[in-house]
Length: 143
Image 1: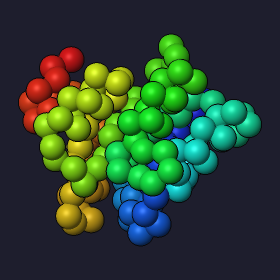
Image 2: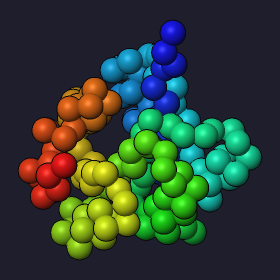
Image 3: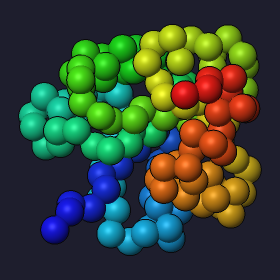
């Protein structure tokens, strides 16, 4: 029997974490979701072996204490050759942020949608592995 997908959400905004988890549960209630309110908390979960290699990490880019860039660098060190896909989900749509995230090892940079339905559609595409086709043209990252 295959294990359910594991997703980690790292976002300092409690409403966004809740919105995100509700969307994932709407898509598939069997997806195992781990919520972190900071990069520091997420890194601690890896160091304490509470999680090893989730299928996807959705990382907010603009957070206090440890921002998304710093967290991404540390996650890449911890995960090394794991197949975890790190997706930046941010309010930013600045080209510089997108390029920086991709250079640091993110698989995808998405701007947070404004509606629950848009979030569900976006997440469904990512979690079903269709994100290469759905989003590569918007980020300029053909894979």
